[in-house]
Image 1 (tube, helix red, strand yellow):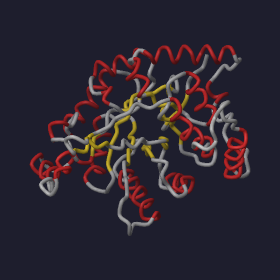
Image 2 (cartoon, helix red, strand yellow):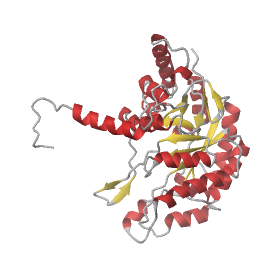
Image 3 (cartoon, one colour):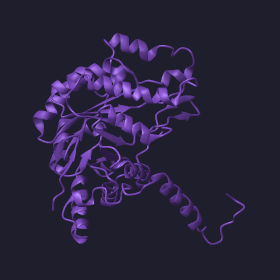
Length: 339
């Protein structure tokens, strides 16, 4: 069974890679990922906020304005709460490269131009095989146009590309007025891959303490439908590789993403639920399905259910929407007056 695939110019044994998460904080766990069958690991993100010139400046910016109102005290973590500082992150890349043979993809998380882009070069020098830019950007300025928002992504990518020669992927959100157009512009700017999609972790409000509190909810299989549809739409229409993330929990989810056109599937929540060794189970189940259905390679699956041969994907999606609404039948006894 040939499970090999290519992603960001890297030849991978399987399409199963580990997404950026705290799971990669420890070198021993990265070794376990390789032993369990992961074909690459995206390291935990280094945040733009960590790249201030020194810790006192960082602390100043994180605490600035927190006396304005009580809720602000909970906006940012203390500097000591970050998983790895900038220098430690570079050491982490070096140690990971020494410990395993699979590709190590560094991750930068930010939303603006600045020092974090030049830091990409140091990641490359530390041995990173590729770089994933997680542009976690939530525009709230009512005077900022969609065109300006998209240009921010392009400016960040071009700035990073000017610093490195290793492949660069961009992790996107689905919230663009025309995602297909944005994807095409990123491809023209030199992106090697798109990771679909970033998950926005909306905070909650603690009613007793009146604090804004983090609220991390692991993904469910239902979350895969949005990235799956967009991967199916973009496959073959842009040259950049497509990575699927969010909602991938079973071999069935992996198969759907591959058929839609994803070169790789990034695993995260499922590993938090069942442990790193669960990668073995997913690979075994993937092979079993392929044998049963007479597939001999991942390449046979790739893009087989995409919309590459659909002249107008927009009309196709509209047709599926109408079809879904008209085919839905309420459960017996449902009161139509209560919706």
